[in-house]
Length: 144
Image (cartoon, rainbow, N blue to C red):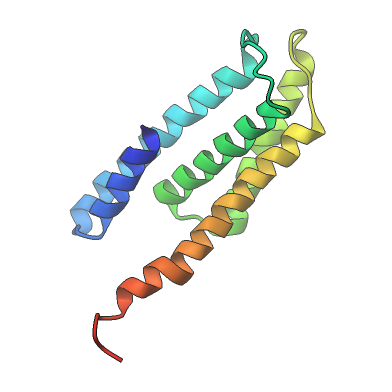
């Protein structure tokens, strides 16, 4: 659902004026704040999920969460890649430090690596989009 909303807003970004950019960034900032609250709740609350039988299922959650956090941070603020990576790396470290202090959670280097993988996957996807998809839209059909 969130992905569909973000995709719709990205399509709308191509047909906007300066006033719409301010509104869109406000929406992305709000979505980012909501996602930070959701991720924080999930990583700090007492786990009550059932075993899925899928190995490393928790790591997929970390990768996906940090992919979405990277995407929303990029859309909300357009930071340089290294600024975004550093800020989200600090958040990932913060998560693990807090989890190490909770009796029902534990810190994990594997979780931190999964978080960094999510950020990396965002930038790989973003690069591919800019390189191939966005570039093809700049060429007029039929022109050589």
